[in-house]
Amino acid sequence: MSGCAEMENMMSEFIKGLELSRGFFLEIAKPILDEHFPDLKYSAGLIGYGSDVLGYDDEVSADHMWGPRFYLFLKPEDIAEGQKIMSVFSETLPYSYKGYSVNFSEPDPNDNGVRHAKFIDSGKVNPLIFIQTFDEFLTERIGTADLSGLQPLDWLTFSEHRLLSLVSGTMFIDDLGVMDKISPLKYYPRDVKAYLIASNWNIIASEQAFVRRCGECKDEAGSVIICARIAERLMRLCFLYADTYAPYSKWFGTAFNRLSTTDKSTGSLLANIKETIDSALHAASPDLREDSLVKAQALVADLHNASGLTDYVAYEIESYFGRNIKVIFAEKFAFAMSAKLKGTVFESLPLIGSLSQVGGLSDISDDCSCRERIRRLYES
Image (cartoon, rainbow, N blue to C red; front, side, top):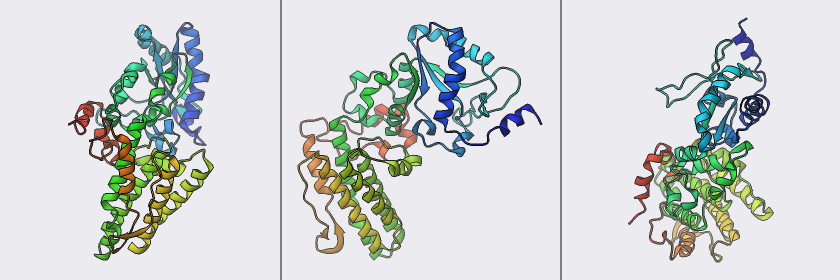
């Protein structure tokens, strides 16, 4: 059996990427840095792209851009050392760590620069290590490194998933205070959050009567699709009330199922919301679908009232203008939240939320070169 095959066979039990990378850095990479660059001040850890940063990685995740890896952030005056550091790593790193390849392929130009683990048993290692200044990294991820000068509309141009990937980052060594630097991104400012909440309630209101109406017209597919759209908006509201960024569509449901709150009363409320939304999404008829969905809306309305963001908003499950359709008139919550936007830049904006809250648009919302064009959606 070849050495490469032996290394591949060592991988018996999956190790989560964060645990793997932390051990790789502390046990292997840090001693190399300590020996060859003893005076170097740096921050190193996992941040930015990757399911491992969010803790959602599994065996399938390991097929690309995953493995023993880390970012190494240097001071601007030390960045010229980056090439030398990488050269030392290439010559001294082991070929594998805990059965996982430390060597990776060159970026695939036909697959967005993706790199794959590639076992070798001779020659230099090409590790999945990124060396940058933190300002360079931030500019690549969200289009700016000036976090102290953010304007309200800037927040609507950021990818919510990328904001999550920043605040979820972990530094193994943080001599440069990277995690302190990103503290302004911890969560949306009050007015941005209020605008997004108002937008999601408004979007729900625009289709709140259609789940049953489509069913009455024998349009089962339409009823299911609209139910799913409203369910997604209710889920997004839960993230907003919990002051938690939502990931993009691949991990959206996973993150929602793990969403929690430290408050006992809202914690039980959130559990009921999850159960009721699940019932709506799996309902076998428009009647059952509408019943569960309107109950889910009522529960999220209770979550809103528990938040204290507005005065109490009275509601009830009632008929939609005398028709055989159940609603809570979701626009009441959009109006209440919009009232909090008086005197802000958001006061006259259409209640459309952000592009990163629309599934399937990550190619646009994650592209920093699109930020100015996205901003123009909101500017007069």
